[in-house]
Image (cartoon, rainbow, N blue to C red; front, side, top):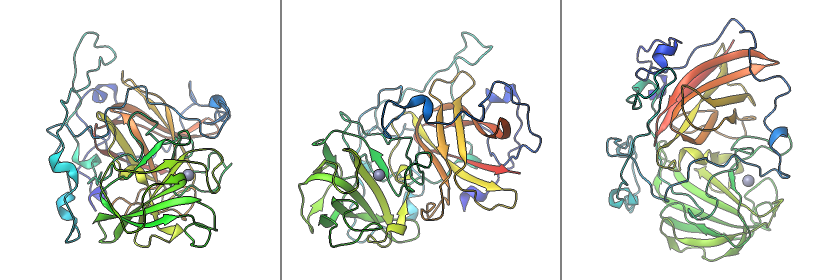
Length: 381
Ligand SMILES: [Zn+2]
């Protein structure tokens, strides 16, 4: 597995390196608790400070998202796609026909270097993983097409909700829902008598599409669209990426109108077959994805750890919270085996911190590459 490979990178936490080439292979446990300087009191939980009234609070990207198909910069060669075995009938994803938009590298002014222009480091192979961004967003760019960060895949919204097997895109009833990729509708209807979740009438009106590609394990890949208002496609119909298939609603167990979106691998009827959609959907242009594991010293995955990701080194962006998956009812990716993901982060330097009662258990700096995933292993001793 690529992510297991160390490239001999030595993690050196100096300010000088922060502005040097990419070097991050964060397998470092901070054994000595660092004195809590300005950081994160124990009472500083992600939710209370930002609650305009619902669980759908989110941290809107500060950058205006680009169009649905904003693409890789020319230098960013797609990886691993060739290693997958598409179905015989598979039409290559629209990728080949997509026109990359002009890529303008972000420029930063690192601290202490006023006036200097600076370009991001090249990709460090030790932090890169073979992305499979085969999907577009299931909501159009004129609506809310980013996920609700407070209730990510594998999260519980601070213990208030059950473990999330998908992601939510919060939009008004009637907002168009789009197919995330080419495929065939294998189910369109309610789930009153066909079980897709832990119980019936969970997703309400829903659609499941089987896609024309497989995951790295050779299993079929499906997307599921839940809580729909109106279904505009029928079982057996073919769809293309971006095609309107339904409208947002609040059917099933939804507490308000939103699209619940899932990726399932293998058995589309299995509630335990989900994967994190954030690893399948293209980041916004110049945004990236942060993914990794949180483990104890023995390498065992740790559940429900809060991870603070804050801009550093002069980067723009917003502080976000990630959470390792609550339990093993949700799965890591077939390729990556991650147990936490933070998607749609503006490229740049970030400090990744895990603390407990004001004591820093892990802290390191990472450069989030644009238009791809950057891998971070967090080991807590
Ligand atoms: Zn949901």
